[in-house]
Amino acid sequence: MAALALLYMNGIEMSEPNRSTPSPRPARRKQQTYHVRNQEVIVPEGCLAVGHIVGVHGLRGEVKVELYTDFPDRFAPGETLLLGVELDEIEVVGVRPHKQNLLVQFDGVTDRTAAESLRNLWLFVRETDAAELDEGVYWVHDIIGLRVVEENGVPLGVITDVLVTGANDVYVVRPQAGQSPAQDVLLPAIADVVRAVDLAQGVMTVHLLPGLLDAESVD
Image 1 (cartoon, helix red, strand yellow):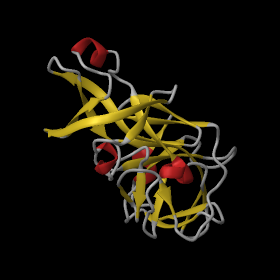
Image 2 (cartoon, helix red, strand yellow):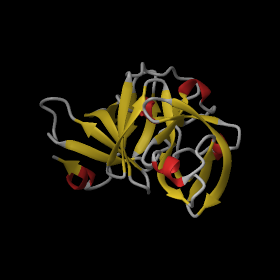
Image 3 (cartoon, helix red, strand yellow):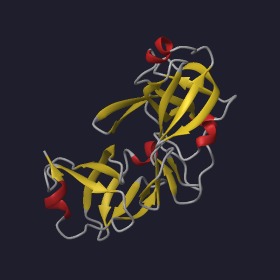
Image 4 (cartoon, one colour):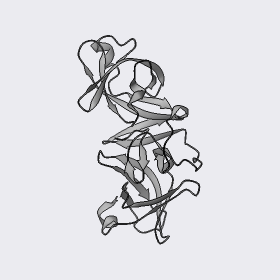
């Protein structure tokens, strides 16, 4: 599961952003855009995305929320989330599991019409409220902007985006002018590829599996 909040953990995609316990975070941009299942998600400054309202359920205002966090307690009754890019505060008053999602009842949303107005909105929390992560786990916004080098020190480029595919995250690496290959490279966020992350130096070290450059380069 990935949160935007989105987590990279030892090369494995999880959820809610990535952070190395001892390493300082790079400065964040005012907002960041991620790609999740072929759609763009704009994450406001200082926030982490933890859920996406993908539909409604019934007639009493429940909404279907797809989780993008490994901390579902964020949706416990009484918790307050931030709704949409306007970051309107909204309180959870009820929650129950439904297939792969949650059915969430928000305060003041009491009928289907009100629930429909929330469809496709994202739910955020403040970065200052982020859960503590274990060593070797990094927020995605820390991954974006890292320089990528091979184990022999050869530079590949800079991570410009993170694609959420469902199986694992994919890092979009943009080569610098004059570098080969000339196209963006897609690197799977798996332990066999990602060997080390040094946030203090701003570097990710990777091992390129046979055929990876040819198979994953994109225009």
